Image (cartoon, rainbow, N blue to C red; front, side):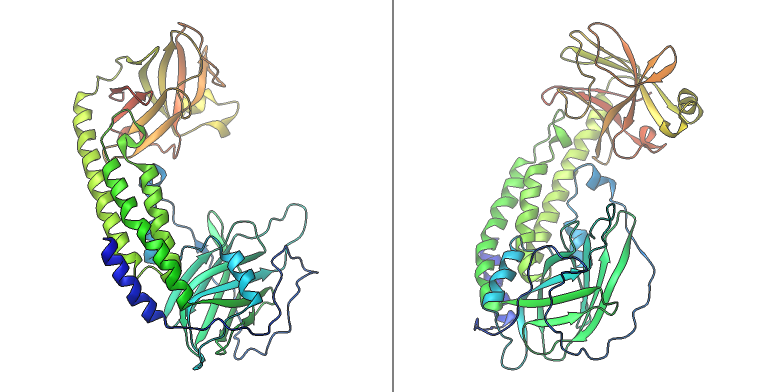
Length: 438
């Protein structure tokens, strides 16, 4: 794969074109924090044809799929589909260096490479008003590119691989990312003037932007450094995919998946998703699918071997028995004094430890999980301990004393979680006990 990727690197460098690093005079924008009073911007050139920007509908945020929440997913395919460009880790330092010797556009007024844009918005101010989590959506030559800046910043640098020609229409929509919707901060529509630095302002007079460029030859050098990490990290992922019924993720190699993800992102940040990153992403997609298929097959086999509902599951000195699944009124009754704490469903377990100590939970020596037929694994968290029918905060176990404890699913708590799960697992990372749900 390395030889194939290195071959495409040369093609990408040729497509990007060339630009010389020659000195030019400009006024750099400081990278420190900004407020309404200290937006130190040079005088902006007159911007042609900026339409009135209207409040559009709030962008709805798509919930993460269960496979991502359970540690299987990395969202690479989703980000590639939406053209969310990974950001260069050193983009702010690059921007600062480029202000000292800003490269020019080519003689014909074009630029090919990575555009680095310093985006600034007036601080909201106030004691309880945080800075925005900026998302820049750029529309250029019929293509839409998305760049997410770091959280809680009113001054941020974003990086985008582009090819700009003199006079190209350039539209930027700046939003404040949120869990449930994005709020429009400002928008700008202008034309690339055929020179760098490229300065523009938002129609609402909140945004000030300065863009500089990392030229094609510098991009090509960095690409040659990034590509060799892709193939070895994929092989490490494939080698690490070994079924393990006691391990987190049933043996799915999450750490190796993260390493491969970062390697692919390092390429996509330089040239986008459709060039050198595309074959690497396709190969990783195939490797993930093969690994998940092996794990799903073993989970199906393990389901047939699980102990019956209500039978004890023991690992080391801890034993649990899944007694009941309670939903709706049964849970609400226990929390009638504080109904806001009630959950749709809980799993009631009897838990006993020979030595006492912490309840089985994520991060402890022993964990309880729900295992699903599609390969997802969701941690169970102690929610309440029952004392004479009343729910109280769960506490440490007493030696050889059975405790009745209610558990909830860490991620969702939906009413169908316990019915759609294949079985429950008690594990210490080395040994696992599997049991059917009541």
